[in-house]
Amino acid sequence: MADGSEGDESGQSELVNQEVGELDMSGQQFGSKDVFIEIPNQSSSVEGVLNLEPDPFMKWLPHCHNRGIPKPTYEPGLSTKVKYLMSNYVSNHRLSESNKSFVNQLAIPNSVQEALADPRWKAVMNEEIKSLQKNETWELVKCPPRKKSVGCRWIYTVKYKADGSIEQFKARLVAKGYTQTYGIDYTETFASIAKINTVRVLLSLAANLDWSLRQFDVKNVFLHGELSEEVYMDLPPGCMVSEKQCQKVCKLKKSLYGLKQSPRAWFGRFTKSMRAFGYRQSNSDHTLFLKKQHGKITAFIVYVDDMVVIGNDPEERKALQNYLSKEFEMKNLGPLKYFFGIEVSRSSEGIFLSQRKYALDLLQETGMSGCQPVNTPLEKGLKLCVEPNQVSTDKGRYQRLVERLMYLAHTRPDLAYAFSVSIEVYTDADWAGAVDDRRSTSGYFTFVSSNLVTWKSKKQNVVARSSAEAEFRGMTLRLCEALWLRLLLQDLGYLSRQPIQLFCDNKAACNIAHNPVQHDRTKHVEVDRFFIKEKLDDKIVELLKIRSEDQLADILTKTVSSQVFSKILDKLGMCDIYAPT
Image (cartoon, rainbow, N blue to C red; front, side, top):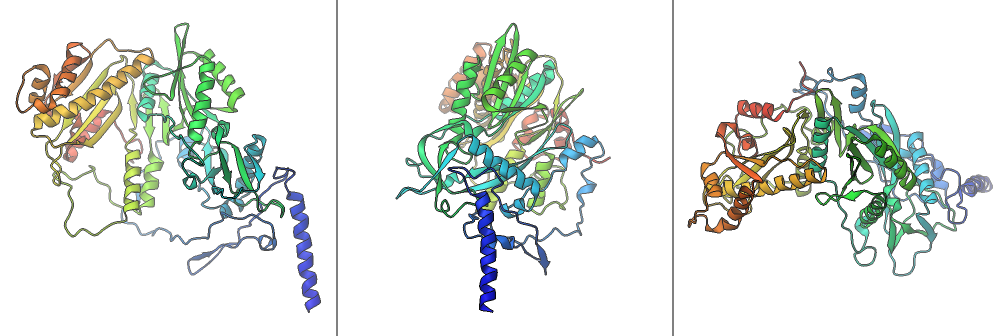
């Protein structure tokens, strides 16, 4: 029995060594063949617990680097007995077949094990590794003494075509930058990020002027940045390596996704290339690049590896596409459909923005997909305050939910068609509305050519002594946003000759702005008063008093009834394209 047992083990080992020999790295490479092991789906369910076991071949592989494969977890399914079914409130019957296909997303693998069980994901993982090798992103070396290597993991996404069909599966190797040490692995990290407000302004101009909206995608953007620091990284999870190279690490020669300095390295390289091609960087938003020639304009904004290109110069757009393809291996994704996590749809009625899938995913994540919908965000008359004897909650989970709700507030469904370029601001504030600290809440809506492009609701930093002071402080901050929009439009060549229209429903605040009267109750806001007065005298701003019932910003500063809420939504141009009939 002992001899037979040894023979089986020896045979198994010989087979394994043969396979490893075929997949060994040549020099500093992982080899020309696939570098990932096959993990068939051998899951079975016993009393609701998933038992996922890798391929037995993996157990006998003595030199297999399989770090990063997490243990399986149990996730109970949602109950099918739901009182308020989602289908009663959300319907797809108004959507075309292509849009239906687009909004029904695929499941993304949660682990390396799940990904390797699917040939499609395994193929793109091999493609990613080969792309990194071709780019000479790293070299395999022994980790120097007293040097610590950073970890890495796989991120999976699915990209779609304009008609909603699947374009490609994407697997990206990401470094665990949170394990880096400042001053050793990195120094400077700041990089400009595209502003969602700038994107909405560009969409507004595209709707008004009938400009084309195109989207480009740069492949492996962070791999183009050059690293000045010495960074070492673990081998990619799931990769097989030989015994000789099992103890080695990747010395990064170029930046990689996840590193703290990667965004800065990539954006610096990209900015340098675009300036060399004749584009000017906007002073209002450094991620916006402009080129004007022969009375035409081409503008684009870059967000990591995605770019939205607008303008009325098709020849320049083609030249830009060719240049980017040569410099960075760029791909033309066609008309804009998806950007910033926002679904974009264009028709003869205008441009529609939606985050339907994002909202539904958030409901499912929080277990509220079967909850009863409400007509307003907050019940009328409700005052938020700290409750005594309140049960403590998970702080991390609460912060994550607040963050996701704030991102959801970045979109609205409709950008209507208009003809003139103008800026209108509706500003409002309550007075001492916060029960705990008696601070006021101010809010505003900003329109460019009748299209809502920016909005905000925020508690003020100081306690206001009167309603006029609360309104006046809010008015000053809102004017700063409008002036930034004015500069942005000027960069785009569409500076409005009309003054910025600032709408306020507080008569006392309007009087303070118009009349240079010294008063004991307004001495402490003197700087704000002179700031607004200067803009009024220069005819840059026109301050208009409106009735309280015409103030659109009311829903950002106080709770209102469902009737008032619906009325304001109509005036904002918002509609529910998914509402069932």
